[in-house]
Image (cartoon, rainbow, N blue to C red):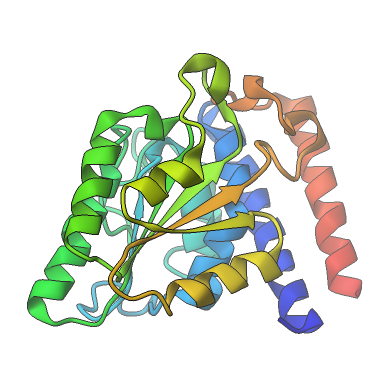
Amino acid sequence: MDAAAKRELMLTAAKVRKGIIEGVFNAKSGHPGGSLSIADVLTYLYFKEMNIDPKDPKNPNRDRFVLSKGHTAPGLYSVLAQRGYFPVEDLKTLRKADSYLQGHPDMKKIPGVDMSTGSLGQGISAAVGMALSAKLSGDSYRVYTALGDGEIEEGQVWEAAMFAAAKNLDNLVAIVDNNNLQIDGPIDQVNSPYPIPEKFAAFGWHVININGHDFDSIEAAFIEAKTIKGKPVAIISKSIKGKGVSFMTNNVAWHGAAPNQEQYEIAMGEIDKAIAELEVE
């Protein structure tokens, strides 16, 4: 990836992070930590990887994305807004009683959302169904789904993984956001799903390990994924919970908490500084 393209993606990802903080602050609730950790991967998906058109969000030939870890909706909403599906200003209405931006993604109300999610473990099953549908219909669209590393402690995830491999769904890519923290603490202390790459490989998936905050690493993974035939692909994205905000970084307390006014100003100041630096490079 050339330097200009990488800088543009980094700039967009910083704006996505700003939208996450804006939404959660105004809602006084939400899940910033895991939204921030997946922001770079979401940015790459929506601005580089997927065949999508905000002006035609229901195009049957579009690629699909399922946010299996649906509680990180602030991240998805922010990238959808940056991509042009709805106004960035609407992020301030997150979780309001009269807002279409609910606490979890709603495919019936939010442009660009392909599947309603929130019950952990279930989103990947929906993504598998979409990928199978494409195979049965002879359609060329691809399906992407993002899971939390705590989420993969759910048994349904592995039923879906087994089925996807059995049906040779090479049009399916699952991204595991491996930030090592879930609501109760480090995942290896709660109910360890490690080793994650070996588990997916044992279930018949092609596995790629990446740095989830490096766009060269992210791009190489998605390019490789398209070359794999006969197997679904699992991208294990090593990430940092709360990435981009100093006091949220690798801090489990920010799994599901909103910043107060002082914290909001600190967070926005840090992100604005990052944006300014990227804009002048």
